[in-house]
Length: 300
Image 1 (tube, rainbow, N blue to C red):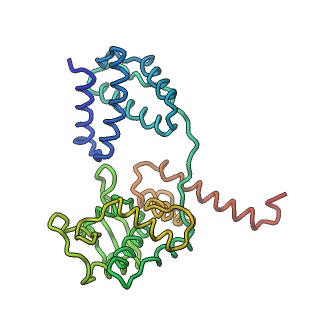
Image 2 (cartoon, rainbow, N blue to C red):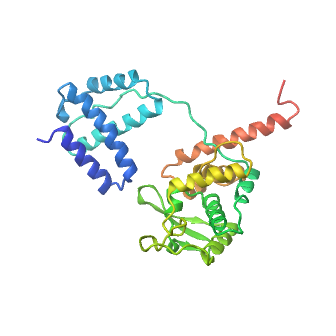
Image 3 (tube, helix red, strand yellow):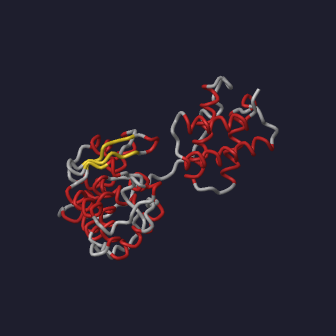
């Protein structure tokens, strides 16, 4: 009978092959479960059937004693739950030992977003008299127009773009695809960039990529982050902004202007509506600020 270490390897293979998990997700699950297996091995627990609720409560106490951030504990417990659900489905255990395991509650963090004026300043920051500036303007316009994640943006291929109809085919988490609309400004910026004779010749491996670095390779998410840092400073925005900040701004501004929550869910590519609902809290906070400033009887 296979031991926990063997099941660990099979579980990661299952996540990659059947669930389409990204390499980043597989590394995170691998690290978190390796910690669990080391904890169990120190206590002579090597088989799935040996793991009970009391054992996992001990693991949770060990995590608490390390002073980890609540979000880190939550992530590790999520990996543990997923692993034992897999073992239960495979018939290796009868009952899930993590059912009822207490999980720390964390304060709900509202996503950061920029004001409309700040976004406009950011979009105007690249110098469009240069090839790099024309590329960067197209990137920023795409991020804000389509609400794409960093990886989705750099992963775009020219075949994914229908600039005549203003549509991009986006490959999101779990290899799920969705169609994202591109506004007029994004389409115009992309057309200028893709027609630019100074655009680098793409390397063979990246022949289809939309956004290229100066050497003709596909732009990376890290480069995208640095790009946002540079233009945030140039635009005079005195707070940190990332590619995800533009995605948050995209969703918040849509809801501020009356967009339907389910439509925003589809545009963001969220699997569950509850993930999108956090943006309604952002909009309510904005409404409260306006109300308190403007209503004559809002304050004592």
